[in-house]
Length: 189
Image 1 (tube, helix red, strand yellow):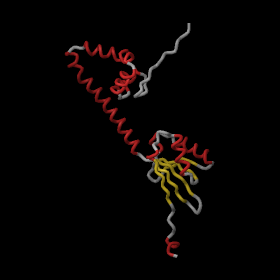
Image 2 (cartoon, rainbow, N blue to C red):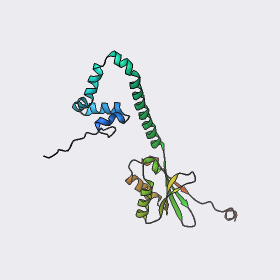
Image 3 (cartoon, rainbow, N blue to C red):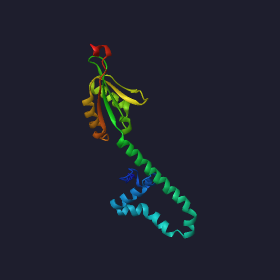
Image 4 (cartoon, rainbow, N blue to C red):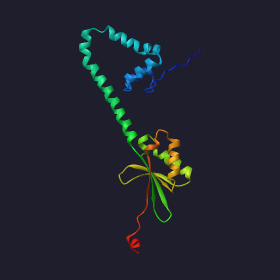
């Protein structure tokens, strides 16, 4: 007696199995997507729900009305929250800053990758292996995490970020060069 593997259909909107779309917060979009994609599957998943709604009486509707609006409000709130997070992500910047330390020594810092879901420790290790230099995650003056790479690798880092993390848009990456200010005594002479 062999057991066949069960086929699980995943939603194209929330990437969950179709039975769990109601918990994603984007149920209405998921329903529309499924209806366009596969009419038979839509009837199979949501057909029983619509039949139950048609059979409901006016009395049932009046008593359950408050409960349904709360559920609808929660999904709308969750959907709005997801949209706000997405807008915040698209408005945030990744800064690649080259900082000159002494005569020929410099350090490159990368700030803002964590907003796009990049694991900073793994990224620092990847940079250290790729460039054969020291690289670590450190807190900056504002108390936020950033990657510090020893050496001037700003151009290569930009290319590497775009190659390894395609969810980071190129227009959201800024390169900054920061030089040390010369001492006042040297500038007067």
